[in-house]
Length: 252
Image (cartoon, rainbow, N blue to C red):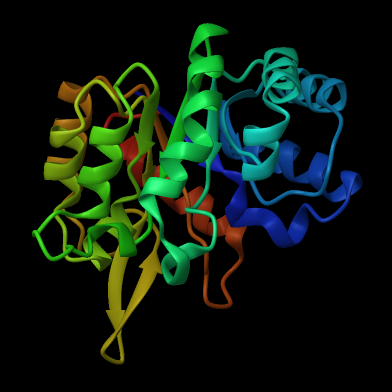
């Protein structure tokens, strides 16, 4: 398994192409070789391809506008092939927790998922906490999505923090989704003043030894470090500390 940086962590520094370019350089300087592109300013596929090559980076996953995935699938596929990412990600259920409609999601994204798979790429769904709410039959949203889409059609970017926030066991969910988790998000959880907070990997309470064990068994290729909120700390330093901790665990 290889370690990467989820650029959503640095979104405030990637609001224009200049900042995006500089952020890629800083990420490479930390030692990362892989990134997920998410939350940045608009960019042309060729521009990203050149910036990645310049910094010795590989984009392994994106979070892409859901409407573009559904309605402009061919162009999304073409762009991902230009900058080399095989994984096309949906960052959140359209409408979020207030409008979570799994049947509508299946209807809207099933054709795109099939087209993406036929192109040799793979659609990925990133969870938050609300997918772990159970319906009247005791079925979670994650279970519904895993049933609605075949393993060939859609994988899951399991986010360790949000699984735990939703009352789930991150390691167990990675195990449950074996073969469908080529990339996961490593995000720790700590408690400050009785509130859950995102934390640098290894500085919180998530059992990452189990997470990494199950990820290895599940066929995970990329461990993408993400910290949506750094609570006033330098996000680059947070990424650096996570990278160093993962390195001490024998990962790079």
